[in-house]
Image (tube, rainbow, N blue to C red; front, side):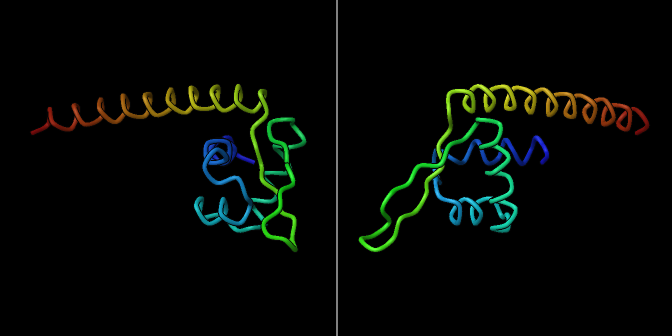
Amino acid sequence: MTPENQLQVLRYLDFEPNQRTLAQKLGFSLGKTNYVLKCLMEKGLVKAERFAQNSNKLGYRYVLTPKGLKERIQLTEQFICRKRQEYDELSSELQKLKAFE
């Protein structure tokens, strides 16, 4: 599981707490979403809670644990740092290319 996949799931759980909708929003297959959620639950970052979808069925919604929230913050900081570095590198390359004009 990549850090990017992990971050995407951790970010969207607040808005899409069920597996099927989460998969659709992220563009993941249901199997990939299931795999990522299981990994996150094993790490203690996410927990599954049962709830009644209708009178005949029970479903699960997935929620962040306090540890999951800390992980989301840390992954977000790392993501921003990587993107800033990419931006700086591209900006430097662009300046070099402009120097040839």
